[in-house]
Amino acid sequence: MESEKYWQKIKEWHEKAKNEKDHFLKFILEYISFIAYLSMNYERKKNDRRLIQKFKRETEIKKNFLDKIDIQIIQELMEELKRKPLENVTWSKDKWWDCDTDQPLRIKSPNDGELKSIDDFINIIEFIYRVRNNLFHGQKGLNFKRDLRIVEYGFKILNPLMEILIKSKNL
Image 1 (spheres, one colour):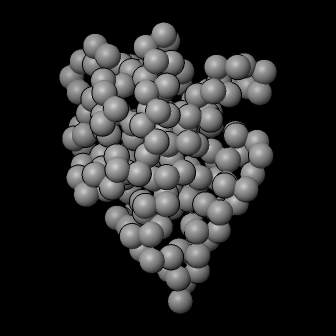
Image 2 (cartoon, one colour; image 1 turned 90 degrees about the vertical axis):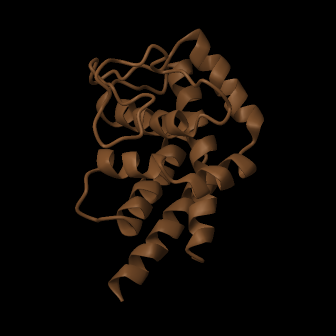
Image 3 (cartoon, helix red, strand yellow; image 1 turned 180 degrees about the horizontal axis):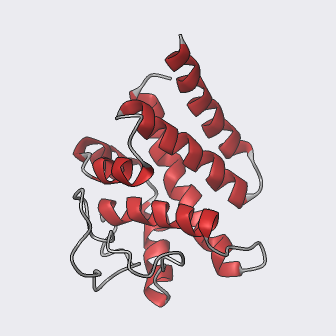
């Protein structure tokens, strides 16, 4: 069956991400498995933004994620983002931070690019999506120490999330 093969690819990408040495590749593979999971679990015809917004409202996954994630990683990321918030380098009018609805906020969030707390699931997911957008559409480079740290945090957050999602599907 076609969908079973796709679920197996999601798991395969996730496993490859764990074994990869380069954090940019680790994040890319993990993000591909993540967005493929969302596409298979929700509606395949929706774009990434709509899938992300729907996922932000998953309270059971949020609970499981916050139980599993190494809180120290979130705390370190919070400090990093406090020093320099993560901008959307491709779209300065981005109003999705602090937003879990299907429509963006009317005004940009005052804490755009920062996490408010260790359980700020909505913005943790937005962080992952913004890292993806900046990496795929922006000017991220291997020579920029901050870019490497941000992408590494993206992977370290996305990896345990994918563990939960894969386990939930018994893959």
